[in-house]
Length: 176
Image (cartoon, rainbow, N blue to C red; front, side):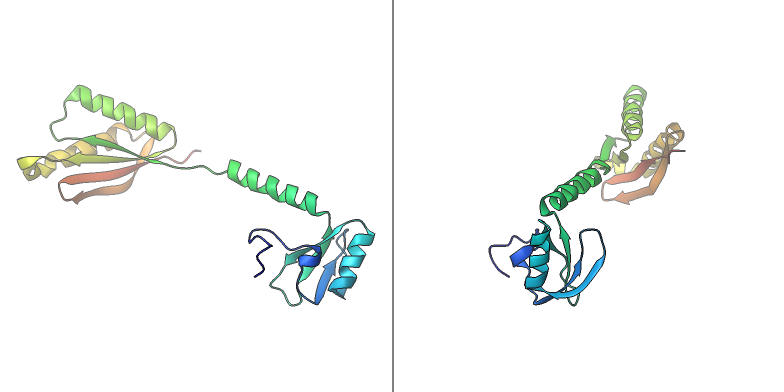
């Protein structure tokens, strides 16, 4: 590939490599297969550019258009697509089997806030020392959290044990 043409741009006018190209006119009608030089001359007559739109076709497809306007429209489409994207984050809340009621309520409030913001939430119960023997306490905390948030969240992933932790995922309920 030639070094003077950046990868992300389309070829136009003299940058088009093929000897023959299928040309689409400025108003969208097919002009047929023309030599590259004839196609460029036709575009220049109209004061427009010959822009390669399908390089992999045989012969390549080129359109007669204003390249500046084409780039502007592509940029607008890209910005629009980016604007419509939503990034879902995973927030994590850690609790212990011996977490007191007030601390538990605070953690549930945080979970509710994360879920209302549209994020998924990973709830982790981590065990220290010999607490690992009482996994049922950890499971009961997770069950209690599911019960306390069932109006706004659903369990996305069942509780799973991994080493000294027990975790589950909560996701927002689908909006109606």
